[in-house]
Length: 402
Ligand SMILES: Cc1cc2nc3c(=O)[nH]c(=O)nc-3n(C[C@H](O)[C@H](O)[C@H](O)COP(=O)(O)OP(=O)(O)OC[C@H]3O[C@@H](n4cnc5c(N)ncnc54)[C@H](O)[C@@H]3O)c2cc1C
Image 1 (cartoon, rainbow, N blue to C red):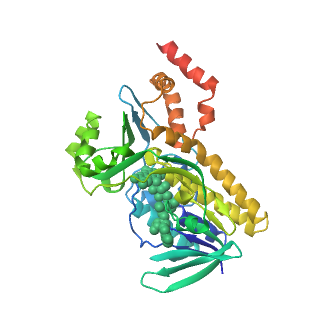
Image 2 (tube, helix red, strand yellow):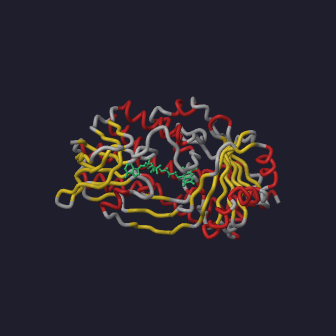
Image 3 (tube, rainbow, N blue to C red):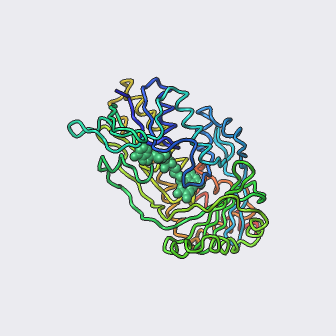
């Protein structure tokens, strides 16, 4: 009997297993994948995610993987370009973008080092129920027979198509549908030291430096264009980069080192967070378009919130249901502002007139630009930045300069 069985061992599952094992709990972590392995995902990680890695004692290992820290953000919306850096938070002084096969392996190893039992190549087929309450899993190792394992809680950290959520019949609580499709690849010889965002009508280009001197470049298009994009990925990709000519020239001077990866399955939803004997974290709980690179950060937050809640419940500080309700509330409070912003950005529509006015007013106002970037990165609360008196200050400062 385990204290927790965690299904899925990437950004959400492994940190949760690590944190619970560090509390002394008996944890089984399973994943059908073999590690190291990649997954269809780019990997921009913002300052709040770096702060978690610092707190968990893992950031030095990420940096040692030959992955550069990123100190600036460049937002090019065509008529104007803003460059700056979101305000830091303790432990989160830079952004970083480690390859997923690097990050996920490191996280799974940290869970094992903390004492979690890890079974890779193990597929969960179904949940076990005892009088309506989830009490374990049924699954099999690769080529092996079905086995059953029991726990006080089963956590679905098993991504967008969560088997745990399906088996427990978990409903969506927010469903905004899918807006975009995306393709990305890795280029050598493309000097880049910032996160670069190029916003063009119906297109979003995202680039950042990653391991081994490579630059990740991703383009997003409206989802309806997916058949056309897929029929000529390279041609459509390069034609989209041409909307940002200086950047396109830099990419053309480099060399594509890997095949394109992509997806048209980029839904925006929240699911119910817990129920009798189960809880969800990461993409299983909440998925969003990658346009603001929020998924890994949210997965880390979920892991930290759920570990704290289970720690309280198992040490008798709170009843389990009350602790899980706190976890769900903290998840929503933390996740919703950037979830809403993501849905707005993912329409790929030009910014509304008030936003265009605001972006214009930020030009030349570095402190306000950095604060604005803080809202995208998650180090400045939206309600603080968008408070009427703050916006008024920014507009007045711009008027004085004009
Ligand atoms: C194109 C694209 C680009 C993205 N770019 C970014 C970005 O730049 N920054 C960012 O923060 N986020 C990005 N994301 C989002 C990010 O990938 C996710 O938010 C993140 O991977 C969530 O982690 P997770 O651990 O919840 O789920 P996942 O990473 O999906 O891991 C789930 C794990 O569960 C395992 N699993 C599933 N079912 C079973 C089963 N039945 N039995 C056993 N194991 C199972 C899988 O093998 C997998 O290893 C992007 C996503 C996409 C699609």
